[in-house]
Length: 188
Image 1: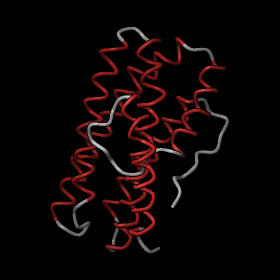
Image 2 (image 1 turned 90 degrees about the vertical axis):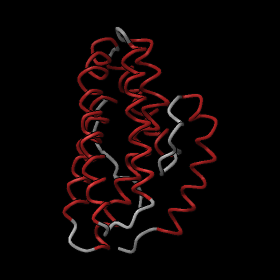
Image 3 (image 1 turned 135 degrees about the horizontal axis):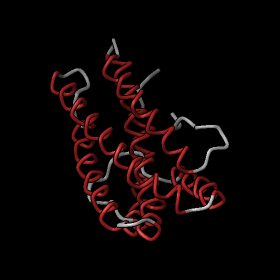
Image 4 (image 1 turned 180 degrees about the vertical axis):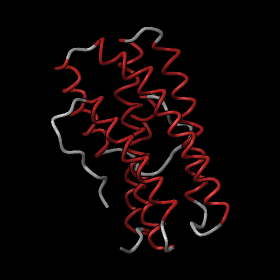
């Protein structure tokens, strides 16, 4: 299943916020799924969107924020720490049976952490990027982010949160992830 495409003329900030909203919706849909098959399908989509979204932010958005916003290094470093913890939790969930009671508890904890993280990005990082970069830059960045998502790993890889680490490990991980996805893709 391909990541849901956000179709609009939005710039990178609008695009990423729309993805944050889709992630929020997928957490709700995964938790509310009635059948194991539906829960597995929703979690597959959630895991994939989280993985490609974070990779694109790490490769494109965070490096630009480091240079363009006030206190960029500290803000980005805090977001990368949050992303690492979320990737660890997501990797743990990925190994679990979606029907286990523990899955629901860990999914709720991950949801809270991810939504908190998204809130920090939107209020601290994205808000400043919107004021520091011109509209043309923000629109160009959207295209680059979309391209990065098309080639990004589709599963969490804790410890790979920097742009250089993603550039080095990402292509190999992406190929392996997409093969694993094809083999283990939930039936619809």
